[in-house]
Length: 136
Picture 1 (cartoon, rainbow, N blue to C red):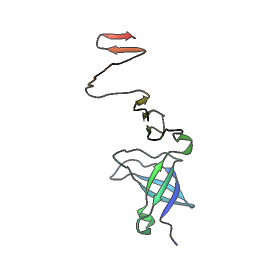
Picture 2 (picture 1 turned 45 degrees about the horizontal axis):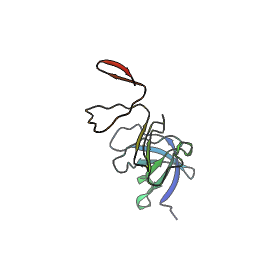
Picture 3 (picture 1 turned 90 degrees about the vertical axis):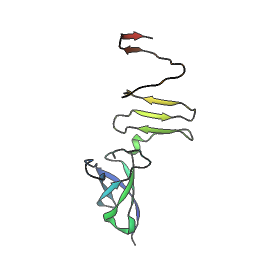
Picture 4 (picture 1 turned 30 degrees about the horizontal axis):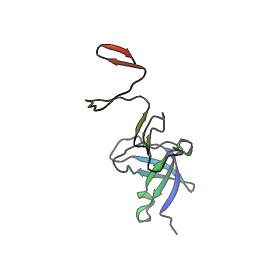
């Protein structure tokens, strides 16, 4: 009897060229080439050692596709109900959509384009603009 859904572990990540990302995954002692499913417009690259749930359409191991997650040590713990975190599994920077209505960015931020701001702004540290650095 074929199992059409299986757990696996990422062995090698895709070279990210071509129409689809393909990762090499180990499951039940065998290696599979698994198409990376990017859901809802969010795209990411799997991490070696991460886990994947593999789907085998029509029971065909040659058509394997999967949803990938980070290695267990990199999982985001203790999130409140309704909160979401987008995290880079390699460097750790993240965007947290908290259950308190706040958006928190952890790590350097680069904005390419205009910024429109309405409301108060609180800063700490050094602010640098076209006239030079300013200390808050």
